[in-house]
Each structure stands twice: as structure tokens, then as C-alpha cells.
Length: 239
Image (tube, rainbow, N blue to C red):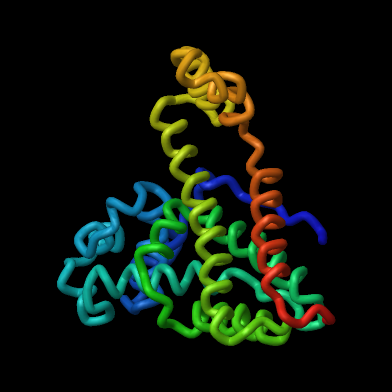
């Protein structure tokens, strides 16, 4: 599989600011403004008031297009989810799931706190539902039992979302502490090595490996372990 370019969670995009001031207010413009606020300030700054301020309008004007903050978060999740391309149906089931996982992780990297938004919302829009249908179809066609299909799909989605969320949290911490991922890793390793050796000998021994910044290798390894487990539960062995 061709290696995709993975964006760091800290890479910034500024969407929604290049629109002319006279552009009529609509749901799409509100979502783009929310993405711009998300990139610049993070999930904690997403509010109807802050989005309205970004657009130069009063907060009341937003409610004609978006019901409340909860709906806005769902719209953000739908927008983010729509950017993950679904793999081709001609691929073997395991390759399809692997490509989807890498693609979804890459999408989550494009937007600050994207993984947290995905985790806080329920899939209801067509783009996110298309992804669930893709996972269910891939697993069903691979021969997995119906009762296992939703569980396996959730395991895969949760692995990708949780991994991306961990990457984002560490990136945010490094930014707050005015360092980088390697600097943060060295600081953590130093704390591990300072632990009581009689109580934590293995944590001390594995300090450098525990804190090493090897996101790509770790993600691939975890994904392979997960899919190996799927394979072990698959009743039908022929593709």
C-alpha cells in the first residue's frame, strides 16, 4: 500500500476567512467558520457566540441555520468525515480496512481536536453513515458473523480515533510547553528513569522505548495486531 502523507495535528488551516463580507449567511459558511475557530483556538472555543464573532454577525443570526452547539458539532464531524476517501471494493478485505484506517487517521490529523469531536458525536449524516456501511459491507463480505460485524467495526473505528486523539493531545502539550515531540519524550523518559528501581524496574528499563515518538510504526503495529485478531475470528477463510 502506498504510504499516505500524514499531517501533524498542529498543522493549521484557516478556512472561512477568505469569503467576501457580503456573502449571505448559510449553514456551509457557518461550518467553515467553525472549522477556522477550531484550527486557531481548539474545541473549547467552539460556541455559537465565538462563531458569530468570527463571521461578524450577531449570535442570533446563526440559530436560523443551526439549532444549537450540539448540532454544530455534528455538522463539523460530518464535514471532517466527508474528507476520508473510501478504498476500492476490488481490494481484499484486510487491505480495504487497513487503507480506511490510514485514511481516516490522516483526515483526523488535518483538523485540531477532530478526534475529540468524532468521539463526542453520533454518526447521523450521510458521509459518516457511508463509512459505517463500508465497514459493515467489508466485514460481511469477508465472512464474519452478523453479530460480530458491528463490534469489529466499532473496534477499528475506536482504535483509529483513540490513537489520533492521543497524538493530538501530546502535540498540544508540546506546544503549550514550547517544545516538540522529541523534547516531550525526553522529559517523560527522564521521569521514568528517576522512579524507584526496586518497584518499577521494567518501566525504567523500557523508558526510552515507552516515550519514543514512532507514531507510524506504532499505528501500523497496533493495526496489524487488531486485524490479526479479526482474522482469528473469521469463520470463512477464503477471499
